[in-house]
Image (cartoon, rainbow, N blue to C red; front, side):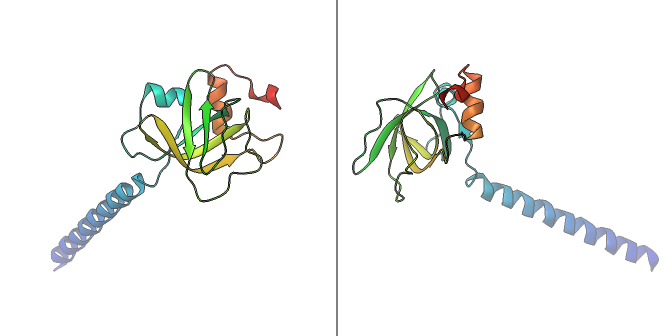
Length: 147
């Protein structure tokens, strides 16, 4: 009788562990599409994203590249590589979004152009997104000198 209880307990634990592993795998697969990785323009050029991959692109808005209209277009640079961006989001462009300033945009590549659905910009004179600072520092650019 005691051996049967022990066997049932081991079976129940094995079933629970199997269900737990299965649920973890399903959560991981589901979350994979909702995770937006950050990339600099140099990383996008050296390791192109897969088709329809949504990610964050960060860098500086290239001077002289911002065109506002029904759609905003501009170029994001890390001083080594430039990526043209077309903004198609529903929200208005942030007031502090400007040329020569850091930005992080979320979207996907379509035919060599990054199509952005959201734009993040500096919220005051002393802030730059950490990802942008790190990416530009890796390229040898001192972002703090611009402020």
